[in-house]
Image (tube, rainbow, N blue to C red; front, side, top):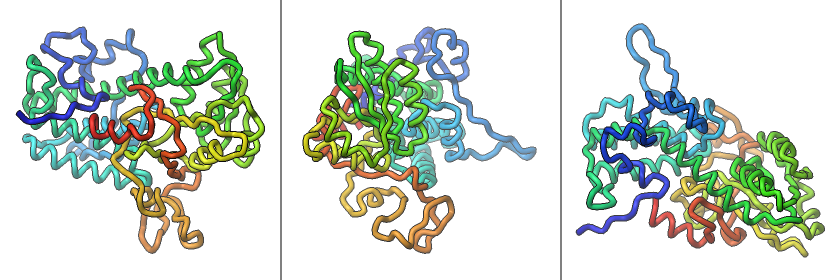
Length: 389
């Protein structure tokens, strides 16, 4: 008997929740076309449709890059990995491939095109790899989790993915809700949380903690230039959370002189397989200061869904550029430009704009990850990659 790895928990139950085609009341059996009828009971994620233009001579060819961008534009709550997954499922709908081998080749080709379109391809890679692994296992008949689970054929696998495209988004939302419950346990009455970056999952944790009327806590928010920071601060204040905003250059001073700060809490774009994170510029500095400012020594926690784990470990300097992120090379300040279509070392590349640049935070600076599967140590991330992704 062949040894089989368990499927990623994020998608493990996607394939075999359906036992018969007659279970119309099961929301996992709800097709994309039928989803609007259930809107009275499920309002979290509206059905997203991808608009295409149809010229007079026939349908327009499928554009995975535009599909991905449309998904992000139409749903502000969707994460980049999940948008990548849904884009690849839409590819299956548009693909004329009629065999498993053809389908895998098409997915690999379009996945490469999608990754090449993003200056920071790592969040997309996390989702695309997760989907590709699931697809490969499904097509090889390795998805049965018990003796009663059927092994579906190619056409059945393809149709099931098409019918349940938004299941991935719903599971991502459920994961975020679960993380909020777990994260709220680390916020204590009378203490102060230091955060920043406009993370949606961190905001959800803070709002969940504020809903517990036995807790009264304050927030110090680092206004680091994130586009979502101002809206996040307004949202927290709307829920009667006392928020003090500070500039990045005052972080060290605040950490060393405010003894009420008990935790530094951030989100992230991706989690690397060695337990580090790649997130917006300034995160690594915040983690370093939390550990090394005299009198500080605060816990540094990262809230992240497991579908953000990517099979990458920074080894080559510059660390972020070495794993595929296209941004300014800190070794070449004078010769590098940013912005779409501007040159970089005589090559035409799309580079990250300065306000979107990211840095790498070493796992030694991270005390734990708050995930939907529980609170994990950085050393456990590798184990999670091996077991679930």
